Length: 121
Image 1: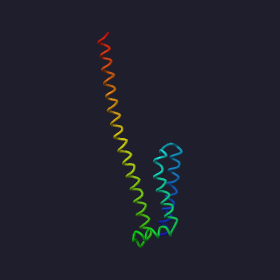
Image 2 (image 1 turned 45 degrees about the vertical axis):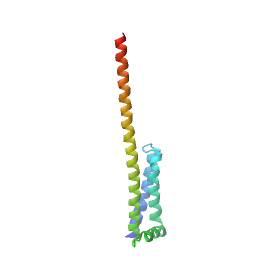
Image 3 (image 1 turned 60 degrees about the vertical axis):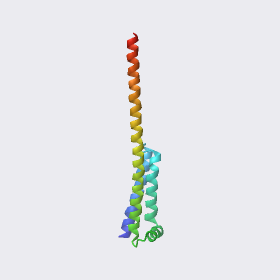
Image 4 (image 1 turned 120 degrees about the vertical axis):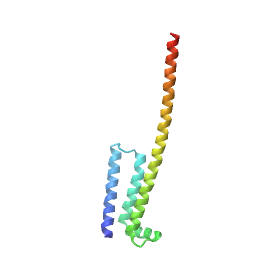
C-alpha cells in the first residue's frame, strides 16, 4: 500500500512538473506564478522518492505511518499555494477597481472638455 501511494505521488509530481513547464512554454501561466507550483511538485517528488526524508518528517510530526505525513505535507503545500494565489487575486481585484475609477474620472473630464468646447463654438 505504501509503495503504491508513493508511486502515485511520484507520478503526479512528475506530471505536475511537466504540465507547469508546458504551460510556461505556451505562455498560459506567468513564470513568477509557476514557481510556487514547481516548488510544491519538487517537494512531492523528493518526499515520494526518499523513504529516509519522508520517515524523518513523519518522526518529527509524530506520525507513525509515513504516507500520512506525505499527504499532510502535500496538503499543506497546496494550501500555501492557494493562499498565495488568493492574495494575488485580491491585489488584482483592488487594482482593477482603482483603474476603473481612474478611467471613469478621465471619461468625465473628456466629456466636460467636449461640452466646454461646444459652448465656445
